[in-house]
Image (cartoon, rainbow, N blue to C red; front, top):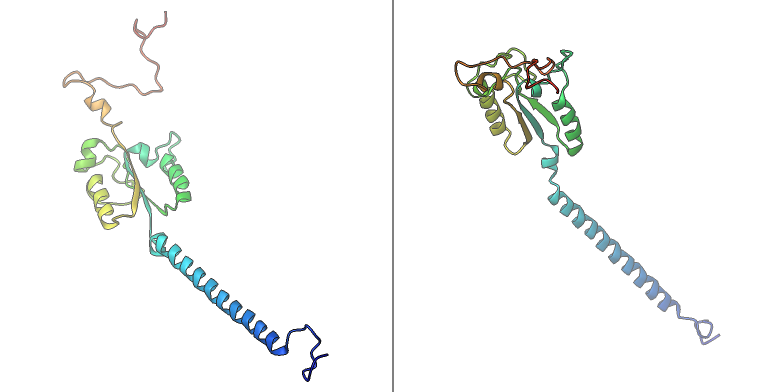
Length: 186
């Protein structure tokens, strides 16, 4: 033992132990504060990059066109078609809403000028031409409508396929072609 302190020779003095312990405590406090500051900074960076307001707003998928986009099915079930299947897939990419302005019987002319033959049956109601309704919706929801699909033209084929005066009936795909040398197998 040495002197009046009663320390064993070679052992650190009690004051020194207290200083070392206090130093470790201060270092622990400093490291904890730095860790909290770093985590808060990372959270703020993540929020800045992934704006929650952007994540929480609507993200629309828009379908335009005729009976194909409308969802025509041979069994007359108009509640689901390829647009609905596509929307189900897009929902995985954070698309939140489907807007289907398609109208059964729509042609290029009726899309621009109105008077679609199937105007009484829509998935989403609108007034006037389909094109005007789509443009209005996109303007009201700027930056929130993407993707937009347009399927149009199948109702234009029978009336525009032939010069005036030579219009012919276009047979449905389910009919057999007429028997003629051109259609007959040899």
